Image 1 (cartoon, rainbow, N blue to C red):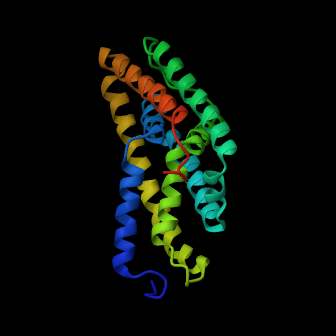
Image 2 (cartoon, rainbow, N blue to C red):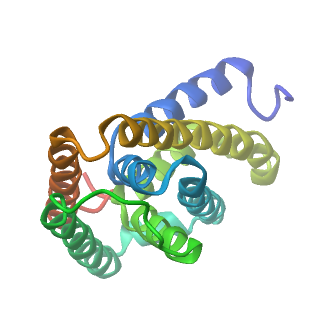
Image 3 (spheres, rainbow, N blue to C red):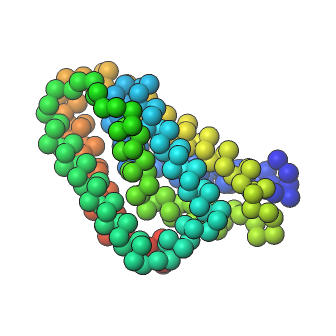
Length: 211
């Protein structure tokens, strides 16, 4: 790592910021835990791959300045947040209603697992806000952006992968420990309630580009 691109101290600060960003529980974490419980650890990694796809896309868009434009557009942000809120609330209500059904291995195809996780990751306004914060605080104007991306992207993607693999493993462990138990019903209701709460919060969110 070259000092001209990012000093070691700046890299540590960025890494700590990103750890907090990807380990704070949100829709992605809840989805990973839910997948782990119903799909098993290995198949749930498809969902983690989808989150990494979204992270890569948002990092590239941030480098090009596109996320800043999205945040600055009232119409685009309003439409996106309503669509996202409806989707999360739908997932939450469906999860709550199906909580009493016996837990069995989910036979959804890999494409369905991937697309659902990608949708959840993409509609989260926390993503836009996080990437804007990362690029406004850590990117140096006088240094070529792609030189800096060579440091930022591997760090961000590695920490993102470790975090959501951890949430997935947690879900898989809970699924094995509580399969068919009363605890399982209430935990699934809790994850459903979390999706509903995230949907409501998303629907009332203000643009990350505004104070």
